[in-house]
Length: 144
Image 1 (cartoon, rainbow, N blue to C red):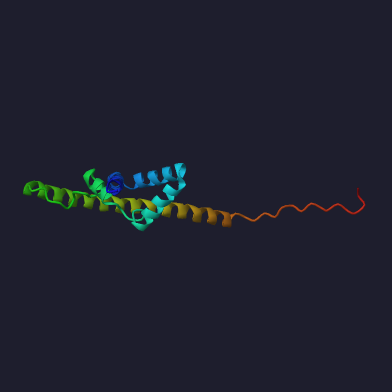
Image 2 (image 1 turned 45 degrees about the horizontal axis):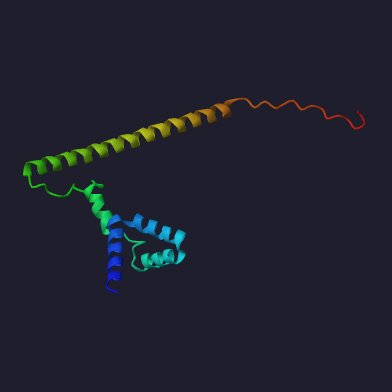
């Protein structure tokens, strides 16, 4: 009897090591082959909050494989490299801000050009003389 909980614990640890997609795959396979097993896995995932929270495995994997800014704040232990890195990051942030302001000025110039073109077309249409279309005489009754 002591072997069964050990198997379940090992299965849980293995699924945890593979992350949330492994839990979902196990649940779907449980529904496909034996629906009560899938239902039990779904209930366990909701009860243990595995469905709605980030697992430690996924956050560990993100930092190991260079997730966004995973090593930006950490010290490497080499002060010269750390100084170079902080200087480079500052320069890149400044360049990013300059580029974003350039893009904003470019968008503003394009918007102004489109607006000026619209206003010119509107002024040209307003300046054109209004010509009334010739009204054709309506056929008289009985002219058919």
